[in-house]
Length: 143
Picture 1: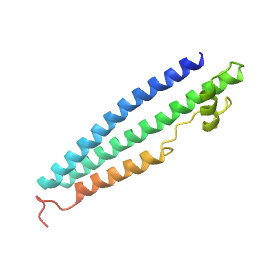
Picture 2: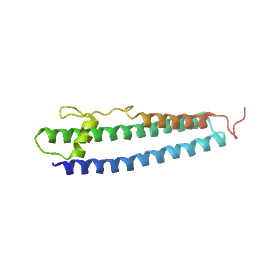
Picture 3: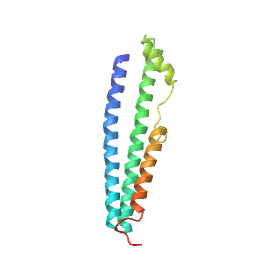
Picture 4: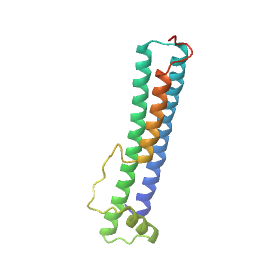
């Protein structure tokens, strides 16, 4: 593989990953609407627990997609480092990208579920909002 093919595959991977991320956000949006519906209708604790579990699963999926995005970027940078170490001349911009990433040809890409701090914070805020909406006293609840 040459440098162009590696970068092209990385961008194709990022496009695919963004499509999966949008799917995860749609699931989280469905969780919001379900939490509002459960809250307003005064549903039972079993329904609230089901919505809470559903929400946790969608947030977990969203974190997994974010972790896999970092894995794909690491893999591409490692492939470029291997290409450079094999003696192939790479462009200046790719060499700078490789230098900035700090990846070497001997590194191993790893999936870290909590490695993307922005995604972790965003997803935990969303989960907190959904759980709060689900379990807060609502219009249909009688205290």
